Length: 419
Ligand code: LLP
Image 1 (cartoon, helix red, strand yellow):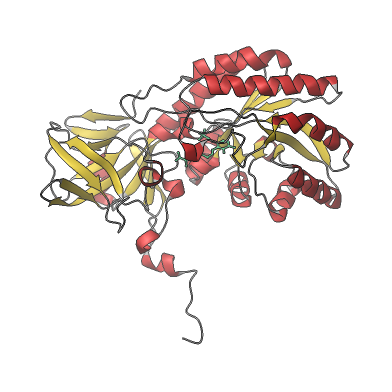
Image 2: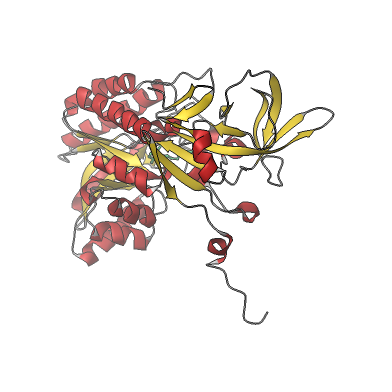
């Protein structure tokens, strides 16, 4: 089911008209469909279970850190892929048990590693020998063994945007796969580390199966070599990265196609397979609702100026990302606009030459496929408040994050006493 659809000339999310919500909540705001998220999680997780004996789907919290969404996913059985101490506390607070939490990232601090060891999380994905040595020392001082997986860098091109590719040799992520064997030998002799798994993640918004296949084959090869060395690896973390369709031309892989490839390459190793999907679970179930501030006509263009800006949704500005833009009131798409925000930067453009119905001040539009890396990457740039987030479930809705007030934005600041 498509959670967002027109009914009687109005755009609905599940069973509520968006203009009805916008009467009570100031725009811009993010709007999520609970049903949509649940359906995507279930499709992914069921496909995993169909192709693998043991699997765990750990939601990549970085893509959407709203506590209600985390709670929903926790209830459906999700674990969490975290990248900071804050995300660790958030995951635990949402009811995701420590034994379902994996910790990724190249720059985990001493404090964050200590917290992870103390909380006994499922696995820490170490990204360098240096990190492993620090973790060994921490685990010994805490009196525990840290369960680790080495994140290998398989030197695979994910054919995605340069800024979100992670598995090439020149990227900062993981350890050259050729060094894995000798590092695991080192881990096996350490006092504080328990090497339980291997980890690989080659990038995000991947639309082809080949990069995944290449990376998983590399991981499988290393697991076999390690077993020959007497090191028993019981989990393979295959990261996230499954892309979604943003443009009308994009064709995304289905969970079935992806899982069937995972199964073919990894099932016979008898390991638990850990997944870290973010975007695939939440992107298409979220939109950014925004109001037209004015239409600015120049010699060359009609600018549709919105009350949402790049501080609310930064993806177009930093990745040239495409987000569909549609009117909340259904109409004939016979007008061409450059859809822009109010921020004082030329990169604050959501879309060029977009077809929409004739628009006027106060009309509502939605920026589609904004459930992942939307609100999560919001900022206070131009001293604008972080906007509200609203969750819909059938015909009810709840504000699951309030819009910041002017006072909220000032809370942590103070004026130097000498001024
Ligand atoms: N695991 C690791 C280690 C990651 O670095 C990431 C994403 C994921 C899992 C989740 O990837 P996903 O399934 O969501 O593709 N801000 C960018 C995306 C950055 C992705 C960073 N890492 C964007 O808006 O496109």
